[in-house]
Length: 237
Image (tube, rainbow, N blue to C red):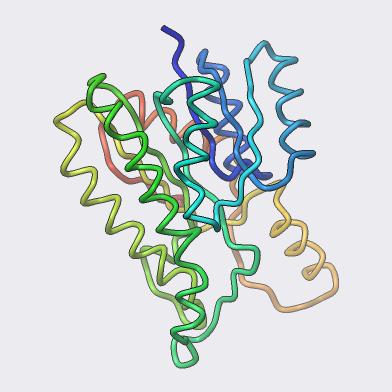
């Protein structure tokens, strides 16, 4: 039976690298994000490498559409063996904790937590029945350690982390692996990295951040899944 992975948030960076890494391991790949053009381009690259890839457009900020989205995925590959969840809000809107508002939190809850919970509800039962499956996520390290002027989205990522930690403790004995990767680095090839270099070249004061290769991050997630030796990894360690 061919294994499959649904990649939610297939933008430049870790999502695309995860699609390539799992494709290399023989997984059929379902790419899910808002923009079809980018997904079609990635699917073409994967196909050139011999990977079967499917494109499904979906707004992950619309948690009410999860049942329909799950149905479209099942039409392509059945219940996926694994899924990766790593989308980000269009506007990250980091703010000081002293200025954090209820409205800002509510605005980012759907894409960060509600949709993820809905997808777990859709696909976890089949993983448990099979006795095999994986739920993977990669997010910013601000979810782990609160930092000055970086409240907002990281506040909800911390809640996401708590949810996934609890989920992991409940399903590990049933053959389902939950793996969490937290990245405190700028990721090469992303819009953030491009903006970081532009502002650095213009002489703006920028934080000294290490760089991370998305392919290496995807390798790390794959190794975590393959060995199931640890729940979390942090980059840099």
